Image (cartoon, rainbow over all chains, first blue to last red; front, top):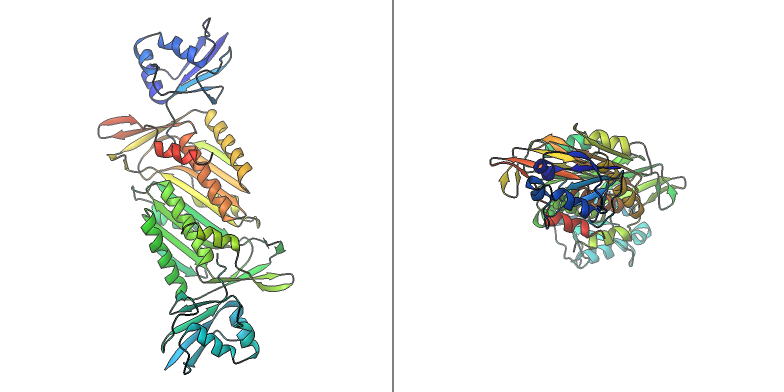
Length: 85
Length: 85
Length: 149
Length: 149
């Protein structure tokens, strides 16, 4: 089963894509786990999602902490702190 | 020398006039003194300007306390607390 | 800066365009309209008359605005207050404040409105089914103005 | 209640008329417009692009509005936030709140704006003489939102 991963703003520009369908890797059960998995791709991914970098995440369009569980079918988004209005 | 006395809102309605030119009576030196002088006319005047009644006063278009001095040429106004907007 | 005490109605959209449009320093425009309600303190109100003290009203508004400008960044401001006969849903008062930032715009706009309700020489007489009655000064308005001290 | 995330411009006057006109319970309409300034944090800004998270943005605005309605009397409300390319003096965001009393209208309008600036998923990229730069989150905005907690 798959998850949908979205990237916005500076993260989107760095990783070069705004959306990606992904087979949820075995052992990945949280937002932080997914972030670590993506970071392991290296290069721009490692940089954009670097540990310690201030990122926000949302699961199914609700802002959640990195410890939030993820499961098949979820829409998971990574983005910088918002700067609206 | 004269003063101009103005009345607004419920005070104006009670005394039946909005403006009056008045020879400043001898011994009247403050807003409260003028109020007392007008009250001495009796009837609606005594009622509208009754002691203890919550009134505001202005001298030359500045809100002032009853102890404020008045002198010839002044524009003195009596009115209830404002209820604008 | 524009202050007007007038009998005629006003147009919020036009007033805001007039003060904000084209100045690239303006990042925030807060505005407020007060309207006549059909009920006040539980009584049905048919129409009302606003009396004011010509001359003193304008002077009071200028003083209030000058005070606001010492407290907040105000790039432009429009204050319009109507007098005369008004009926429910009619507009009574307009305050528009343009500033660089929203905090200043909101605070100045609310400050000006609080003072307009408590200090500017306007008196409201409401027509109710029982006849005309002069509106009494409200404690809640005085408290709203007090907090700026 | 109207929430719109759109590319097109909006008209304050028309929006206010649409929510306040004709309801005699409305005594107060507070509104706010945010506009693009030509300078931000000391840098000249030529144009900017607002990116948002379609779907989540509308959901966030509905949640914020529902929260505001538990706190204040809101008879009607309009929230419009634009996205896409904007240049200095363009309008970005509009919040209009109609209430019986001015205290509620002001508080709800400012509350909604604070949340729009700090919680709604919008990101601003400014074009400066040195090229594009993503605007960093501001401490002052976070503090403005904190005070409602």
